[in-house]
Length: 159
Ligand SMILES: [Zn+2]
Image (cartoon, rainbow, N blue to C red; front, side, top):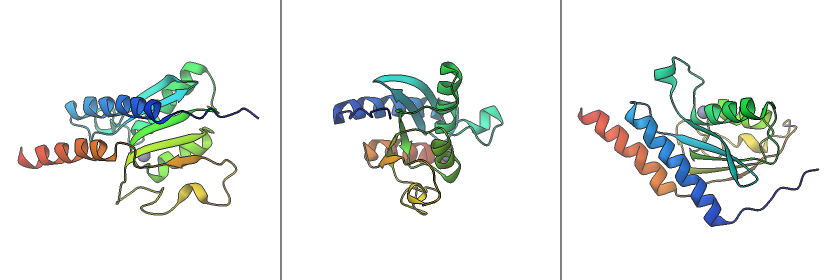
């Protein structure tokens, strides 16, 4: 079995800031700002931001975009040993995708009370039927990750 490298917190923060920058990029297109990066061996292998409106694709969540990009690039439908950084707690669709992709670890920022399935609406990753275990950590730069979203919705309400 491949050994999973333990990445220190400063590395985690650096990658979460990359995800935050992607979230902001989405906001400029009028998309709800959520960003994600996928990292393997200390390198970003996939980037994405939430963009279902502009792509006419309901599955175009940040995680989906980043994972698809990495898998295509590496020509591999599985991404073992990788860590996904996402600014918002994943939804059920993305949580399923994370398991199918064999991602080792997920680090998310803000919680998503309405649709998050890590802690908010259930605990997807602890279900017994899953044939792959994912290490999940939440709350990294949660304030910044949430602030990008709040600012977006505030601006949308006032326009
Ligand atoms: Zn999602």
